[in-house]
Amino acid sequence: MVPMFLFIMGFCTLVPGSYALHLSKPVLQGPSHAPEKSIIEYFCEVPDKPENLTILYELFTENNKDRPTGEYTSTHSEKANFPLKTKLSYEGPIVCKASGFNNSDIVPAYSNSIDFRIFYPVSEAIISSPEELWEGQDLILVCNITAGTHVSYNWRINNVAVGVPYDRTVNTLTIKNVAVHDAGNYTCEASNRFNETETFTSQSNAKDIVVKEYLSKPEISFSIVKDETITAQVTCQSFKGTPPINFTLYNDSVVLSRETTDSLKHTFSVAISLNQYMGTVHCHVSNEGNEAQSQPLRLEVVSVGGAVTMRREVDMASNFQVVGLKLFCKVDRGTLPQYYWYFNGNRLDERGTFYAVAWPDHSLLLLSVSPESSGVYHCEAGNKFENTSIVRSVKLPISKDELNRVPTKVVVTIFTCFSLLVAAVTACCFYGVIYRRRLSSSEYILDEAATEMDRLHEGDAETDSMTSDECNEVEEEDYLEDEDVVIEAKMDDSDQSYVESVEELISIVQELLKSTEPEKDSTSEP
Ligand SMILES: *[C@@H]1O[C@H](CO)[C@@H](O)[C@H](O)[C@H]1NC(C)=O
Ligand SMILES: *[C@@H]1O[C@H](CO)[C@@H](O)[C@H](O)[C@H]1NC(C)=O
Ligand SMILES: *[C@@H]1O[C@H](CO)[C@@H](O)[C@H](O)[C@H]1NC(C)=O
Ligand SMILES: *[C@@H]1O[C@H](CO)[C@@H](O)[C@H](O)[C@H]1NC(C)=O
Ligand SMILES: *[C@@H]1O[C@H](CO)[C@@H](O)[C@H](O)[C@H]1NC(C)=O
Ligand SMILES: *[C@@H]1O[C@H](CO)[C@@H](O)[C@H](O)[C@H]1NC(C)=O
Ligand SMILES: *[C@@H]1O[C@H](CO)[C@@H](O)[C@H](O)[C@H]1NC(C)=O
Ligand SMILES: *[C@@H]1O[C@H](CO)[C@@H](O)[C@H](O)[C@H]1NC(C)=O
Image (cartoon, rainbow, N blue to C red; front, side, top):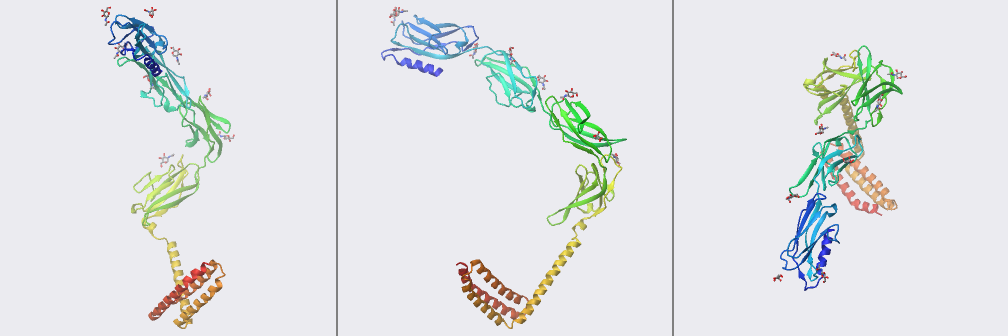
């Protein structure tokens, strides 16, 4: 708007003829801000203006560009002055225009502009907010001021600038989808500033915003307490939710107990008998926002009984030495078993130099295998809630050497395998010897090989009609047969000269085979 206004004014100055008289740019002076309905004054003057020239000064505001807000005719070179009673409509750039009075030969000139604002210092910021808020809702806070114009707002939570981005020119702060971490002490600071020295600030009251939470689905669990009677302590716990919370324990659909508390957890005492099904219970929670229900819980406590078994798992080092052991203890029956570990008949604590008892019920013992840890281990199982019914496992001796000795079973297996291997090799040798005796001389083998080659060559012609795969198969089988014979013959003889002749023979046969190889390739590619 302002540039357009100035542009039009500038354009107008170009219209008159070149013989016209140009005035210097007038200087406008006056306040940039004032309260509404107050009297202010602007002054306008053309510097170095020609003497004896009557000048018409006009004052224009942004909202009324067509009609001057003030007029002044200067006949004696005096400054123009414009007294004004401030109005909201005067806000914006104010400009003074100078022109020749009844003299169109003088080109009008426009002054600097002064940005005028109606000004009220801010006062009394007060936050208004909803009374209560549930998670997921939108929080809208209003910073209400009793007075103030051109105000900028700053919001703080617990004395720290609010994290979410917001518009500082409006008095509301909106936080969408609030969560518990948005709760806190909110304050707003309203301020306005009109020049370098005058800044006004108003600090609001602190508003404590509480975000209420819906209850999460409760977890149900129980433990047993035994004194004269046996009691199940059924605990119902939600992980979030704003108190007060109503807890109700149901046996199917029958209410067993009801309680209103300020905590997220409540424990009900239910008298029970051991080794007897006492029904299926669940708990129900509710607060002002919602209600939720736990999983059902079968109320049956079986006392420990049956056999106690131990199982072990080994940890090996890279050299296959057993360096660690995990012992697991398990009792056949028992809803709430508690395990105890013994070393050479002494009860083990939670942790020692070479062991650690782990898992909530101590059913696992971790052992570092060392000379120190050699001894006899056993475990016992009892009920968590009493000491009387104890069941004992068998005793397990453990020593480092024992663990690293190769087990007899493995020795037997390896020995058997080895024996079988020796037997097989011996059988092969005998077979080779007998076979060799059947061959009169090494020449026979050569002849045999040569005829075999011939047969192969003849076979080539026949196998031309075969598919390449069939062809390869036939040749390969024949080839392997020959080699077997030769190798067996070589294997079973210790006679040096014979070995030499056989080696010679092998090389001859191999050469022969090589010479057939290119042909073989060509036949396999029809
Ligand atoms: C202005 O007017 C006065 C009196 O009328 C005269 O004496 C003077 O010379 C004029 N000055 C100019 C620059 O015309
Ligand atoms: C302006 O000039 C016109 C004639 O050109 C005349 O009628 C009028 O009265 C003058 N106005 C003033 C204020 O002197
Ligand atoms: C702000 O204050 C005014 C006057 O005190 C009141 O009328 C108005 O309702 C308030 N606004 C809010 C959002 O509280
Ligand atoms: C919020 O601030 C007020 C004033 O500083 C203080 O009285 C109040 O205890 C604070 N509330 C919380 C929750 O910090
Ligand atoms: C700011 O405005 C006030 C009142 O209008 C005035 O008294 C003061 O001199 C101004 N300060 C500056 C630096 O402009
Ligand atoms: C739950 O109800 C069953 C069936 O009515 C009943 O046998 C059982 O004793 C009840 N359990 C408790 C803990 O009251
Ligand atoms: C909690 O229980 C009481 C009494 O049984 C009842 O008046 C109240 O409305 C309940 N509140 C909720 C949040 O369920
Ligand atoms: C179990 O027996 C130990 C002593 O061996 C005793 O200190 C402990 O209180 C008993 N625990 C229970 C639940 O009876």
